[in-house]
Amino acid sequence: MTLPAKPRLALRLLFLVILTACALALALPAAATDKDLQAGQDSALAWLNLIDQGQYAQSWREAGQLFQKAMSQEKWVNTISIIHNPLGKAAGRKIAAAKTEKSLPGAPKGEYMLVQLQSSYANKKTALETLTMAKEPQRGWRVVGYFIK
Image (cartoon, rainbow, N blue to C red; front, side, top):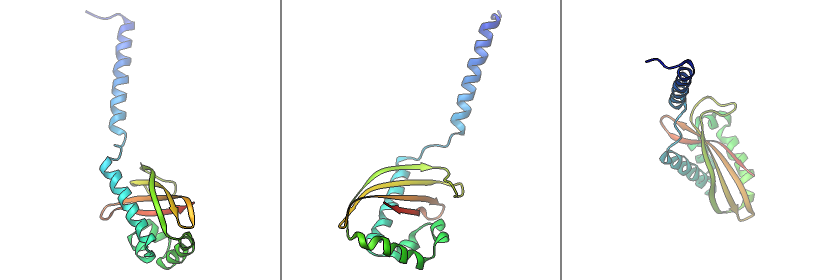
C-alpha cells in the first residue's frame, strides 16, 4: 500500500525534523553540572578570601595562567592594593549569578565561568564583584579576571 503524495511529504518532513533535532541535541555542549558550578564558585570564594586576607601575591599564584600571562605578580600586588585596601574589611558576600561559557571574547576556546557576587565592605556598603574563571586541566577552576564595581 502506498500513501498519497501529501502524506508521504509530511512523513519525510517529520523525519527530517526529528533527525535535525537529534543532531542538534548531540552537537550542543552539555550544560555544566551542579557539581561543576559549585566547584567553580568555591574556587572563586577561596580566591577572594586570599584577597580579603591581604595575601595578594598568593592570589596571583592561585590565579589561572591567562591571568598570570596578562599581569606580573608585582603589578598585580600593586594594583589590587590600590583598589582593595580603601574598601576596608569584607563584611559579606552572596553569589548573585554563575554561568558557564564555552568561549569569551579575546580568550582561547575553553571552559569558562562568570561568577557575580553582591558584596559589602566596611567602607563600601554595596559592591558587585565579577570573576571570570577558566577551567584548567591540571588545576581546575582558576580566576582569570576580576572586576569590582
